[in-house]
Image (tube, rainbow, N blue to C red):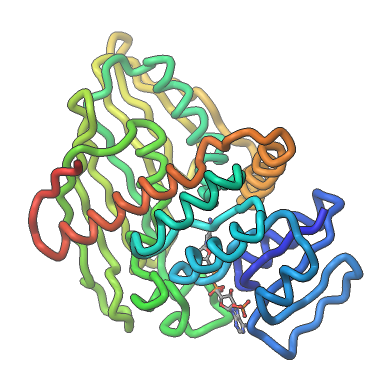
Length: 327
Ligand SMILES: NC(=O)c1ccc[n+]([C@@H]2O[C@H](COP(=O)([O-])OP(=O)(O)OC[C@H]3O[C@@H](n4cnc5c(N)ncnc54)[C@H](OP(=O)(O)O)[C@@H]3O)[C@@H](O)[C@H]2O)c1
């Protein structure tokens, strides 16, 4: 099997390594860099999509800057490739319908790169919610904090895509993971209100802080805090219902349950060892299996469109200072 990986930055490298270690595929890397060499005979380097498509790959991993995902996806979809598209789908709804049409006509398998759906604690929370462990869900609080200059210590953070609006950067689009797992838990929000903007001293014009209240069906309300100006990485999710509370954070990586009747906490899942890359390997294997079985992934193109639209509405609410009623 030939797999094309478009964009050889931080996530492109991760996927190439994982594919080489876990599959028997030949890899074609499409990169802008001309001086780039790779000493593995299963890997070929090319500098343009046309050159890459001549190699007749059947699967494409789109791992370039956010603003280029859709034009790249359209070109690869036209050539009949199944697609793994890194999150977020894009930074605008431009050409989305074109992509949808080609994918439908050619019956392509498309999966979005939302690795948090492969985090064992998030999977467990999803499972507990499905089993109504907390009774009727009333509210959720989620957080994702980190420090942008720590993301790629080898480069000037001001030059990366995350620090540039034109490339689809900013906190909401870049850390869209919490939006995606809330969407996985509760579906599309009906109402969104957000304070989103540039608040810190980071030397970038993009939004670096976002605090959003979203109202979902069944009267579920969530508060979501995203930022990338903190000096450390911290994620958490707390869901409150009529029968108790589910809690997880990225420091302890355990899912705890507070039983409202017994008035006590119990650990439901504790990860003995947490290897970040395991999520990416699991998501890649899940995608390859969907391709093999021609099965629609749980987080396909439609889900990618929905979550991108939620992110864009959050940004819009932040700009207009208005509550957005999602149609
Ligand atoms: N799911 C996840 O956990 C996850 C994590 C990270 C990123 N992402 C998503 O993946 C996309 C890419 O993010 P990224 O973190 O991989 O961005 P990145 O490291 O900044 O890479 C983006 C692009 O910059 C170019 N580049 C990177 N290093 C370079 C170098 N040393 N010299 C010249 N060019 C270089 C590469 O283009 P060429 O190869 O064409 O030269 C690469 O495709 C974004 O949409 C992001 O949201 C997802």
